[in-house]
Length: 317
Image (cartoon, rainbow, N blue to C red):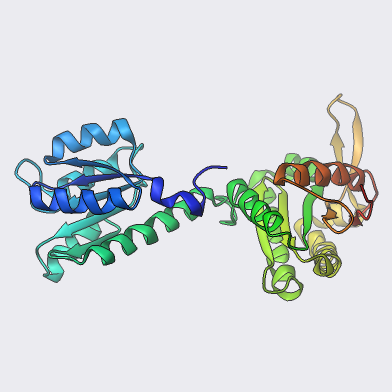
């Protein structure tokens, strides 16, 4: 697992400022907090280093001798390798015009000199956390992706929390995608995501968590007693709404005429939802990988059953 909340202080920061006192004070403060800091005086030199070290965040002075901060910011945003890196501009100018220009150029934040070092540290942490969430999020649903899912499961296992993991997948989704196209397929995935979120909010308790593994695969982490009500709600909602995503003719037939991987015609049933539920009540898990492996095994069995189903695995060791 990479870039979890526990290693935010191990990230690389590129400091671009021609003032030697600022470079010395800020570098010392950030290094003391565990950050890896590269301090550069000139804009052109900083751009070359940015492409090499790929910083996690840039602190950028506005007034510099060779390139001003606006030019450097535009160059960083124009480079695909640094286009999404958080940029905090350091400015001695408190005028709103300068601030607006910096933000319009692509900066994420600004702080006015002289600044309080603790405030600067807090802003750095905030932007690194937000950047981490955005990197891990699934682009289709904006739900947390695999690194965050793994982190959540590992943390709860380490605390010995009662744990249920629901592994959710769509069945007969490929024939639907082949017939209706990926745009409509994405709408089905977004529908499922909304229903999963609604179910978790309604039945998942204060610690219910939803993650998107990718494609049509989702994960819910919650207390064991919450698992079945969540699964029942998702299945009821999905089965009630999925017919609206088919043509009138396909709804009337109840299937899509399709071709299997061997080139043989077959009738693909409507998309259904399969949910595998595993818990640590009867079985001890040491790692998130063990949970994922066990859940995948149960999901394979659920997908072999007709219709939308959930299976609560109550087997012991």
